[in-house]
Structures are given as structure tokens and as C-alpha cells.
Image 1 (cartoon, rainbow, N blue to C red):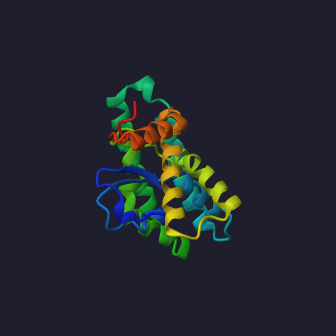
Image 2 (cartoon, one colour):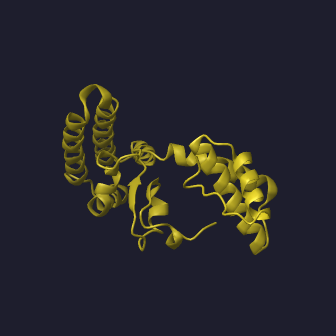
Image 3 (cartoon, one colour):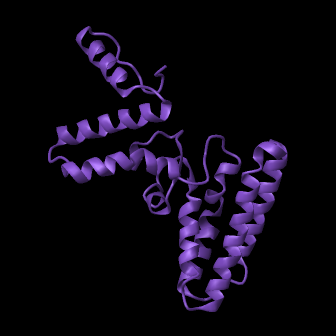
Length: 203
């Protein structure tokens, strides 16, 4: 639907790892989705290899402790929160890179943590970044439903229209504004030769 190279350089986002693979040339900060990591680790606990199961359970325990700290943020204060989370981050990465089983699944996971370990903990130091992309998935859910029902478009103009209207709907919803009002103001601006309203500065 859009090119990753067109994303603004200042954008911070919580994304899934497959999407991150398409963003190697983008100068942006990303937070790998911990919910996806948890699902992956839970899958590894269903494999036959006992060492892989034990490895996955160690990491799941560390993530559980991290979320326990995460939910105490307001009670313990920002300074204590950052210190506790950084300690947990170091503990988690140490567990992830120590005594790694020789199975393909475990080795792949460990290599990912060697290359992108910090991307799983960006939310600790970056404001407004969440540890999961649940909100992102909710924001684009209607896009997936619409595409499935309408079967999408065949031309460039139709594709551009869908990209723009989906962006308006998702952005207005996240900001708590009326998409109808924004579209109405945009049409008025067009007919009266006035500057178009901006989603970034929409009141």
C-alpha cells in the first residue's frame, strides 16, 4: 500500500519483525512487538527438544517480570522505572544469549537478539512508544476488512484514494476527531481555494 522509503525520518513505531526487515534503509527508531515475541516463544515450548523448551520458558519468565515492572510505572516513578527496566533488559538479553540450544529455532532467535536486541526495549527510553503493536493492529483492522470485502482497486487513482481515505479515518480515530468534519473542511477548502487542513495539526 505504501513504500517504507517514504516514511518520515522522525517516525517512531511499534512494528512486527517481518515489517522491520523491509525498513533497513529507513532512518527511524522501531520497537519490535513483544506480543509477537511472546507468541513465538510459546510456540517454541511446544517443540520436542527439551533444551529449546527450557530456553523459551526462561525468556518467557523474564518477559513476565518485565511486564510486572511495566505495570508498576506510576507507583514507582519514572527514575526507578527506567532503572528497573534497564536491569531487566540486561537480564533478558543475557538469558537470550547464554546456553542457547543448538536447534535452528533457538539459534535464529539468539542471532536476532544479537542484531536487534535493543529494538525490543525501545519503549523504555522513548516516550509514546508501546511495547506491543496492538494499537497499530487495531488501527488498520478496518483496512483489512474493507479490502477483503471490496477486493481492493485496480487503478492508480483508486489505490491513491484508498490510501488517503484510510489514512484520514485511522488518524482521526486515533486523535478522537470526526473524520466527517475533516473531510468536510477539506472539500470546503478546495472549493474556496483555501489551504487544506492538515492531519498533523488538526485541532
